[in-house]
Each structure stands twice: as structure tokens, then as C-alpha cells.
Length: 388
Image 1: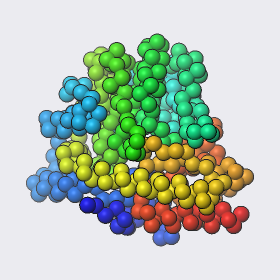
Image 2: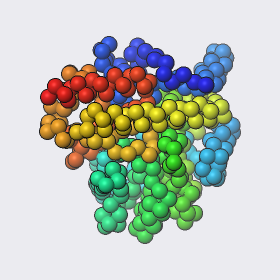
Image 3: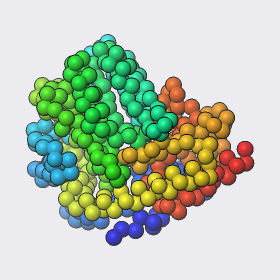
């Protein structure tokens, strides 16, 4: 039994989320958890450090096998060892994929609002970004894919990057939605990069379907990205797994790694050890943390509905992130940011970073924290709004 209510001060740990915040500010900004990772992870790292030599580290068979077994057990998805290419982290996987599979004039299709690197990497590489914004349904309080626009725009793209489950709107795409995506990808012969880093953080009554399990026909067009970082809260020892069934696509990815100076088949020692221990022993911890996150989500949802009804929040099916709409307050985005930081002393992820066009007056809130901290943050936001 884990105690996720226990507060641990992270402000002197060089944690990105809490670094340079004053003692009175609550940061619900960066997407990591405020919970201690599975104890077996720390035990494994400590045991390795007893060796006292931190030389180059190879990826042993156990490293690959524990991930393959995890995918089979949780999703009944059989991944072959030779399909897996390891990178330092998921962001580097995205950048390498875009470099590997786009032509000089090619387009990168994305669906905002979405994780900021989806927006930033194509333009930084001098490529055309093709936006197919998600559609919001007020009746269902969810976002959906605009398949009509997706079908039209796919012909302009070399590559489509899917966020599944979706950061920040919390959708866990259904099998039927993923099948429609696969059909459009194959009809247009474009490469699909499916970022599935949140695949293990799923709310009750929902189920994640790996893109790689949709059809073997899709294998010739698919790269799926996974990592243990979000699942077990070990983002500080990052790693990324790229599942690339097609040999030619895999060779192109590997060539791009070499050209970019990324060493193939090596990994940070701590990342290697932490990932193995987490996949082997961390499932009980994960099951408990998902229950706690779901309770946090229910608390968050009920609090907003009862106390700050002008703020709207989409349903969360997966991830530990809430997408909040503050537009009814009638503030500018700059005013909203200033009030949250200076008056409420709460830091949220600005919506403009996740949607350049329509992100004004939206914020993303990370609810993977102690319930007492979440409660205090919400009360501060309520008091800020009441004072307007």
C-alpha cells in the first residue's frame, strides 16, 4: 500500500516543475507526478551504484524482454525484439522521426491542441506544419477528430503525428477512431508516428488500443513511441522505445540517428536499470496510482462544477492532465496568466503553448499531486475568480 497523500518537498531537487518557484507557489505545470516511484526502482539503482564505475552501458536482453512482456500482458500486442529502436527520450524520437520521414518540401500533420513539441519541431526543421484542429463537442464535453478535414489534408503530408492518449484534452481514442486513422494513412501512403507515452495512464472504463495492433497492413507506415517515464514517474531517467516493424523504415530511422550524433543501442545506466525494475515490479504501484489519480480527477471535476462553474473542463479518459477553458471570465490571456501567477500563486501550463491559434484563455492542469495540494490550488483559483 502506497501513501500518495504524503507531501515531499521537491523545490531543492532541481525538478523542472518546482525549480525557481517561491515557497508559496503551487506548480501544476510540467507533466510529472509528485509521487515517489516504485521502491524497486530505487533499490535497483542503489545496487548498481555499489559497483562504483559508471562506464558506457549496453542494452541487455532483459531490457528488451521486460518491455515486450509488458506490451503482451497489458495490451495483447506482440512486439518483436528487432522492431525496437531505443532513443534517449520521446522528444528525441519525435524529432528523429520527423527528420527521417519528411522530404524537403514535405508536410507534418498534427491535431492541436497538442503537446508543444508537436507544434515546434516541424517549424524548427524548416518544414510545413499542417494543422487539423480537434473538434469540441459541448454535448459530450469531449474533443473529436475532424475526419473530413483530416482526409482532405492528409494528401499534403509526408508524416502524421498522433498523440494517443491525447495530451492535453485527455481523449483515449477508440478502436474505431484508430481504424479510421489507419485507413486515411494507408490511402495517402503517409507515415504515422504514434506517441503513446501515456498509454498506461488510463481512467476506469476506458481502454488504450496500441496503434500497432490495428492491422498488419499498417506496419509499413507506422512508428509507435513508448516509454516508462510517465507510467512510473521516472522522467528524470528518461528513455524512449520506437517500435518500427518495417525494416526499411527502421533502417532510415537508424541512419538518421547516426547522422544526428545519437548513439545506437546505448543508454543512460540509470535509465536502463530503472526501466527494467519498473516493468518487472511496478505494476502494483501503477494500479494504485491510477486509482488515486482517478479520485483526484473526480474531486477536481466536482469542485469546478460546484465552485467555479465559469471554468469548463473536458472529460479526462486518460493521462493525468486536465484541459481548462477560462474564456467565460472575459479576461485576455495575458490578464489570466498574470492573475493565476501573481494573485492565485498557481502555475498552470499556458494553452497558447499547446495551440498557437485557439489556445488563448485555456490552461492545462496537472492533477498528479497530493489531494491536499490540489485542493489548495483550486481554492486559490476560486478566490482569484471571486475577487474579479
